[in-house]
Length: 257
Image (cartoon, rainbow, N blue to C red; front, side, top):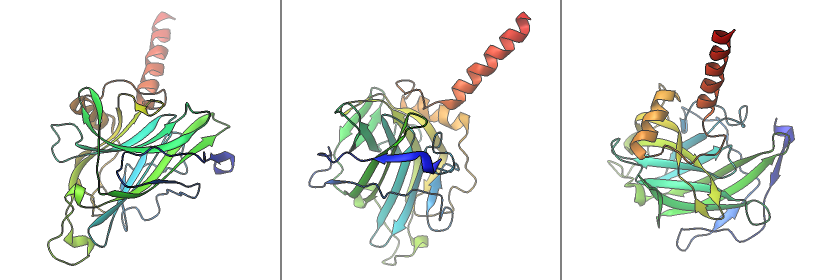
């Protein structure tokens, strides 16, 4: 599949909600499962290389000086977003949005930060996000876009350690993790739909904290309900619902025969 994946990077002005920071458009972003469970925390368990047409994938990696490095990729013509919440009963309080502005005569990557509410994503400014890199890849054989990005965060996530040591074991940054997807009109973000929910608080600094968590349908449904994310997705955001609809149709035909 990789041989058929043509990367298109628009050399244009990137739009960013990060004050004082710029977004680098890069065709060299390579997001894989390499290091999952050992050097980085991964969510969910799918392979973004082998299953690039269906896999929404993210990872976090703790680095020295209380810094977290994130990766995010998803098959969407709009946006893929990483949502973090300290309380499972509220919507994601921090949402990092990697998006494709596909109305300006081509695909242009842009990055925004937001919070998730019952009315959708409310744009906010997170001043401690930096080193953002993004790309929009076009798989021409599937007529499909792939949005991917990497970025760093620091104290905005209350990243703290019990000592001055930079050991991974000394850091505890617990969040409920949701991956969202949605449509984009220019740089206006459509309503978010949950495509993955961790189901438990993950320690973003511990590569092993998600070893027993899978991308279950029930977890994704709970995340969508809690966050108010019940609509506004593009056609690629809910493959489970699509499969269920096909199954029900088949059962109906059997009953009529």
